[in-house]
Length: 116
Image (cartoon, rainbow, N blue to C red; front, side, top):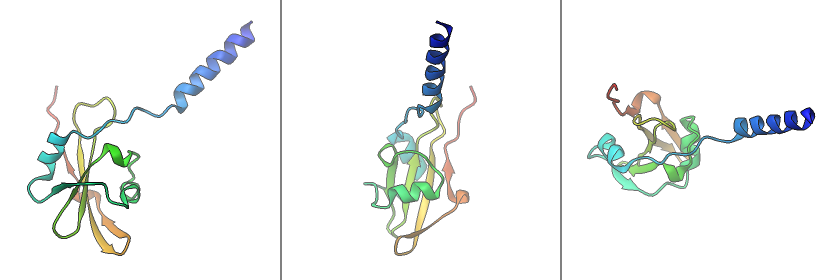
């Protein structure tokens, strides 16, 4: 009996450890405020997965609010980490050559969180 309980507990713990956290979707109003007037809302580009990987982000492109600028640059507004009230981040990506993009964490705009 103890063996069955131990196996059941181990399986439950393993399931909790391997279940990914829930994905949060970026808030349109907060992202628009971060983006400002230079950026226009856009559909996710065909290189959305690559752009998010470039910024070491593990969020699905559908949960990101995408923007484009007149110069061909893209911006991705990422939602805060699961469970956080604020913390949206706007990453900008500049096209270099075909299917090559430049990105720098120093160009990211971060939402200012009000202390609780």
